[in-house]
Each structure stands twice: as structure tokens, then as C-alpha cells.
Length: 163
Image 1: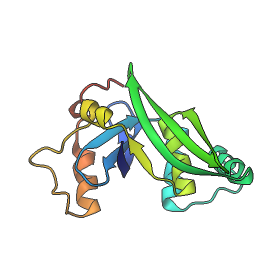
Image 2: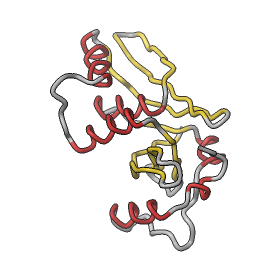
Image 3: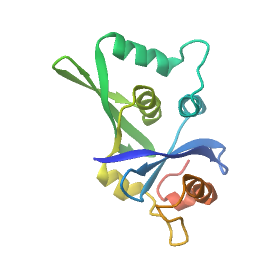
Image 4: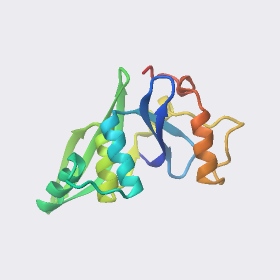
């Protein structure tokens, strides 16, 4: 597993579908995952520090995990089958570990709320990730430069995924 962070959250201009782009923490591969609008909103709100008047689904799940004495140890993006990505939550409580099947978008939204690390299967990154093109930004450049570069990418540059 390779640790990843959110490089960009935006809208695929071709399909008008939200897409979250994960980037390996200590590398340059990026992994696009098309997600639903509600999950995109939940991720964006947490990134921007916006609080809803009432708990949203991911806030509720955070309260349940912590209220039951658990902690989210990590989120793993594990596989993709027929253009559907799979993820797992690893929740610890006392001396027990619980592995929970989840959608990547929900997993990311929860990881942000609980400050848990996110990982992607290395084989998955190798299969579906996009290596930055030679004309792309240097990894040491600013986040704004990376954001502009990712916005200009055509969804077809991502390879196998057909939204």
C-alpha cells in the first residue's frame, strides 16, 4: 500500500461528474476516482472547514466510531472492477480491528474528518494511475501549479476509466 493525499477535487468537464484525484504522498502518480455529488460536497466542506448546521452522514459516522470508543486507523483504496473502485476502513477498538467495506468517496470523507491516513494499493496505482506528462509540473512546484495542470488534463488521459 502507498500513502496518498488529495491532490484535487473538481468536476470532469466532459461528464459533469465530480472527480477526486489522489496523489501518492512521496511520488508523482495520481489516481482519479469519479464520485457522486453528495460525497464531493462532503469532501469539499471538510477541506474548506465548513460546518453544516446539523451533522451530515460522514459527521454522524465519525460520531458513531468515536462514540463507541473506536478510531479510524486507515483507509485503503483496494481495487477497481468494471470501473467501480473499492475501499476498506480499518477501525480499531480496544484490542480488536474491524475491516469495513466502503466506497472510496465515503472513506475519503471520513478519513478527512478523523485525520486518518489514506492508502492505495500499489498494483492499483500501477494499473490505473496517470504519470504526469513531461510537460506537467515538477513535484516540487506549488499546489496551485499542480491544480492548474490537473484541471487541464483530459479525462481520457486517465486510461481505463470510462465514466
